Image (tube, rainbow, N blue to C red; front, side, top):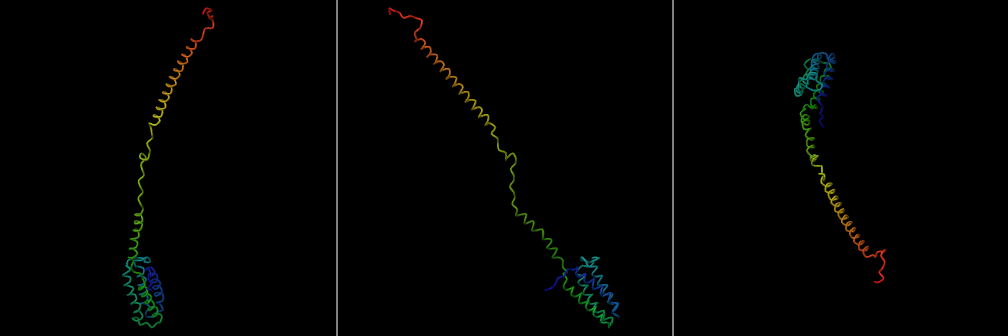
Length: 204
């Protein structure tokens, strides 16, 4: 499985390799100058790449990938061109070239996939909001209030009053009729009863 490293790790390893090559070039004999120059170029390349570990972001990642090939060629050619016979020079140059080649092959140079995913991320909440059903409108205060029966008390009072008047008339008529009947009966009874002060006629 091919390892994919972020570009900032690529830069960090190149910083360390550049410092190692420059500091150990003093023991490289005739190849010291070539190694120091190549290590310095590697350090500048890592520092000027447009990535998170770059001090000045001038070089795009794709150009950095091509320049790494140039650094690999310079490291391999340094002990050969200088004619150095120091084992440390040959070892550092070839090991440094192999390390840069490995980084170049396993680095994730493209950043377009992350931008594409980030641009599509807000699409899901929009779809979620569309599934929420709309709430029905609330009725207004004038529509929800039930009409009060304003004429009911007046109708009830009128009917009660009419019933009371009818009852009073009936009682009055009954009382008057009973009084007249009682007066007639009393008058008739009084007329038929004999007077106690009169004496009976003996000749009758």
